[in-house]
Length: 421
Ligand code: 2PG
Ligand code: MG
Image (cartoon, rainbow, N blue to C red; front, side, top):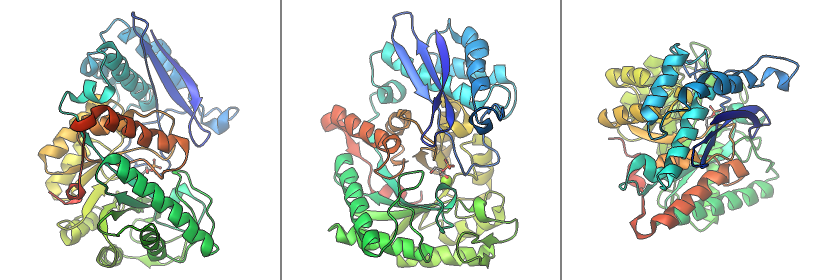
């Protein structure tokens, strides 16, 4: 049996949850995340637009598409046939961007099928998807200062992340949590707000992006750790959000307007002054010449991750590979809509010498599928928010359990994972 329902995500918006119940009575369950700063080419999240419910954000149509359209077609199929089931849903939808049935309907089924298959074969999800070789734990990239579309402060850049590198995943996570607490103390000492944003990071009003990084570096030291050795830094500017078609406009802070070249100077200086190893969406999704220029300037030293730019889409990524743009791709299952297509994009990235970063969305649920996916694919990097808010810690805690379960076989990815290939 396949059944869907409307549940709430971490922002209090409705989202789709799907149960796939096997004849044995075993049940695979998954729910679907939702972004705030979305790429234009993302697969379509179907919303009801009925203003009488949830401000138009209801997902009853997507739920109905699972229960009435997809369910009856896949119910007789074997859950181990993930590829066939995903391909069938893509065909049933029939549009290039899943706008008929909704990527939220399709992904819910795709993930729930994967969980059902794992239960059926009595394997943990990471092993069911990745085989016996799946034993690489990712370095967590923890977004401890939130800005952009994720907070109502004055930071234009969306995410300031720490990537703590311990001897194992549990130690990395501990470093991350300790820095989070010392950042809280640091902000309080400076009379700044310690309220958190959508991804659990602090959202203080700060003078500049450089100030945000400065507070983070101080907090790493206060926690007794060494910036650049125990903890390195990453940013997601989500630059499409503040690009007006020709300039980068810091609308939340100084109102200054920067050309692509000047914007790249800012990143270049920040990477020189701080141990920053990864920049995500430093340029806007429609500023391909800016992207090309930053790749030429920084792409040999720093990981440059395309999120809005590539939207987990193999075809769009192929354009980037052809043009020599970016050197890594962010992987969000709901940007493309099925597990099969996600894996396809990842294997194409690997073949093309691009790194993959597994990612949550700013609107999340308690679902932890991406933790298993990160281990199954040996991606080596995951970003899933601060060590705060249950929907974020659920993913990190799942990784703790996976590490424990793998025992001596578990291996933590290392600092080298950020080095461009
Ligand atoms: C991003 C994501 C997740 P959103 O830009 O990388 O951090 O944000 O889900 O809002 O697109
Ligand atoms: Mg992003």
